[in-house]
Amino acid sequence: MQSNRTPRRIMLSILGAAALVAAPASASILNYVGECVPFARAASGIQIWGDAWTWWSQAASRYQRGQTPEVGAVVAFAKSSALPLGHVAVVSRVIEPRTIMVTHANWSRIGGKRGQVEQDVTLFDVSPDGDWTQVKVWYRDNEGLGGRSYPVHGFIYGRPVGGAKVARARPAPELTGERPDYVGSLIDAYAR
Image (tube, rainbow, N blue to C red):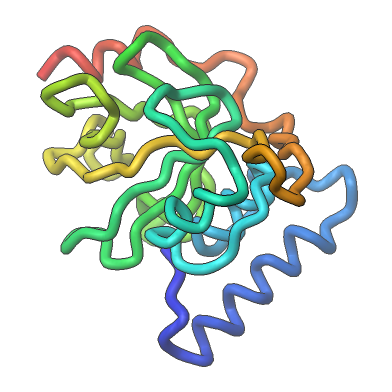
């Protein structure tokens, strides 16, 4: 969740993005610490800037968008009272039509601090029509899906819109782990 409201936050966001860009080729995106926006940009290859809630509208003329999850797509969370700046995460696995895994930064507290990356986190579609407009997210502090649902615009794919002057996005290879917990993901989603 990135804010353009204070110079300090802007500087921290720039430094976080610079750390991702300046990291040696052997560095992993999983070591990133910072806001969700620079992480999602680096992990997905989708080149959009600004607060997370603006990504959906910014993508309209540049990248294809939709309501079906795909590996490497960015999930664009809408602005809400719980997420005043929105949130973006990158799809790492599609488990079944209403359950996916994402890799994202700055969601759960890890060691008491926000900003770190979580790999292969469960996202469950709780929208009445199964269209990914409301989701629940696995939350480390609860060790399960959180009790709150969040509004989602949809998925931004790494494919340019016809005529857009952007390169096809290439997701980072570390989006998913070697052994994600598929069973745990489904238990989290359906054992409520």
